[in-house]
Each structure stands twice: as C-alpha cells, then as structure tokens.
Amino acid sequence: MNRLFGVALLAPLLWACTRSNRNLLTDLEASAKRAPRADADALLQRRDWPLAFLGGPNSTRLPLRKSGLPVVRGSVNGVELMLVLDTGASVVALSGAAARKTRLYLPPGKEVEAISPGYNPGYRRAVCDSIRLGALRFGRGVVGVPSREATGRAPGGLTTRTWGILGCPALGRFVVRFDFRRHEVSLRRHGGPAGAPLFTEARVNGTRLWMLVDSGAGRTYLEPWAASRLGLLSERDRPRHTTKSAAFGRGHTTAIRLDRLGVAGQHFTDVRAAVVNTFGDIVLPDGHKPAGLLGLAGLGERVWTIDFRRRRLHVE
Image (cartoon, rainbow, N blue to C red):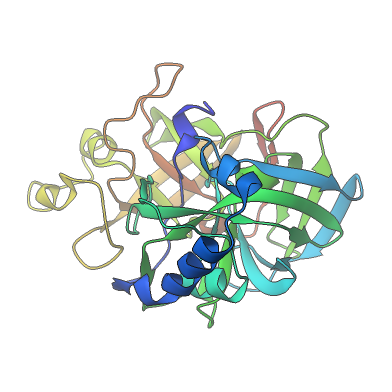
C-alpha cells in the first residue's frame, strides 16, 4: 500500500481555475542553489514522503474550524498556518504562498506526478524542518508544493491562500477521531509507523465497492466506471471523465445522488455525491479497484474514528 501511494493522493479541493506558481517558487530555488543542504538533498532522493515524529503527548485534542473540511491551526517552520487534516492524502502539502512564507528548501527539479482529483497533478518536492500540530512535534520531512496555484477558493472554506494539507505521514501515526458534532479532532498515538491512506468496503445502492476514507473530501465521489455500473452516469456525461481530472471546475465533475450508502455498520440515504476520474487504472495491491472517495466531512455530524495501525474505520 505504501509503495502504491508513494505519489501524492490528495482529496478534491474545490477550486475552479489555476495559474502558474512559478513566480512564488523562483526565490526558493535561488536560495537552495546558494546554500545547498546535503541532508535535505538526500531526503529528496527518496521515493517516499518521510516525516520524522519528534514527540508530544500520547493523546491530544484540537478544535476544528467550523468550515467545510476539518481545519486546525498549526505551524510549519515556525510560521502559523491553517492546516486541512486529510486522511486521503499520502503527503503533507503546502500552497505556493505557504511554501514561500515558510521558506521551504526547494532546489530546482522536475515535478512529480500526483494522484490529485480536482487539482493539477504536478507537484514539486521540498523539505520542511519542523511542523507543529498542537503539542505534537514533527521534524524534517518531504512535502509537496503544487506546480500550479489555485486562484479560486481555498480548501475548507478558508479565505487565505497560505494553507497546508496534513496527510498520512503525520496523521497515520495516530488513531484519529473526527467529531463533527463538537467540531473537534482527537489524536492518540498507536506506537507504530505512519500508516498509508485507508480503504474500506462500502455498499452503494446495494453494490459492494472499495472506497478511500477521505476526511479531506467535502462529499463522496465515485469513479466513472463505478457510477456507470450503478446507472448514475449518462452517455452524455461520460466523455467528461475519460481522463483523470487536472482542474476542479466545470466539466470535470458530474453531480449525482446516492439512494443508499452503507459503511462501518451505518447507513445514509439521499447522499450528495459526484463523479470524478481520480484513480485512473490503479489497482490496489490486494486486487481491489478503487471506486471513489468516502468524503467524511460531507456525511453529516457524525463521529469517525480511523485506526491506521489496525486498518479499521468506526462511525457513530
């Protein structure tokens, strides 16, 4: 699973247009060329997205911002940022504005492909020296910076372009409990290495599908093949989804409704959803084909617990 998600898997971020991020990153490249760092360069040669955990309490509780996605206050390289807690992301990622403000170490290099529904799939690899989430401390690690920067809305209803996404290199070390009723998140250390994004079985209109557990998605999304199998994607809309989405906007998604959705023993009816081509032809190591994203934040005021070590999902 970790090998599969060596590329970034980021949940849909609701933006409509993009522009070049080049002007935000040129000064970071120049700084890295003037002062190269052998330790950071060695990290960037790795194919995974490592992030060191330095310590903190065994459990912590943080308030969630009242917005469309689970957003908390944190800091990167000592700079305070709003961070989206995204269990569907296999990286930590920063917007171009945040990368510049936090002075990431970003030497010139090629972008890497990222499975990024609703966003440009090209990301640059950079190194940050510290991340803080409440009393939790993370050390040096590889983060992603999008090669193209959004000009529409920021994720989670944020009004700033300086933001970050905290994915599984950080969250995967914990049992994470999202309480959307009380607008808070609890993190309890499980003692093992960081876990990869979690897939779970769901019943959509009575059909068994494998879905990504995605706290960073504001609604549930189905792959085109899954929506077609369920009779939810018309022949007219099918051409929109022949290739993976490169920008989240008009023509890249098709709104649908799910009559029934069952997951972890709970049942939902009349679920707002959409079709987007996220995974392309990817098949999971266990042979399952991903059918879409289970957008936790779009399923009402429930309490969701993701145990990354035991690979379990609980909802109440």
